[in-house]
Image (cartoon, rainbow, N blue to C red; front, side, top):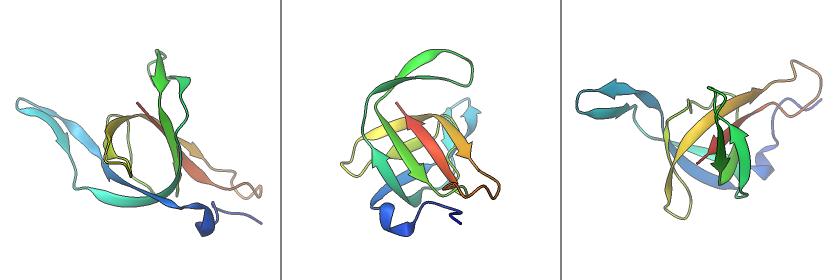
Length: 106
């Protein structure tokens, strides 16, 4: 039974600074964390949590335990900085699917 994405497929590393709100001085982020993932750099149309259609330039697939809420700042392996559009939990609850977090990036 598969419970998560096999480690051998998590061949990329990104840095995630989880969004922590806004203040009078700007956007707040929690400390950065290095995340092992599979990064699919493919442009596609996705919907924001508010229902707006936007363009995603890449998607990272990581462990369900990854902390990457919408609006988090992400640095990709090539050094480009982007923002999380939304993170979708893909949890099969024992169905044998590879459980993971799908992180859609601007």
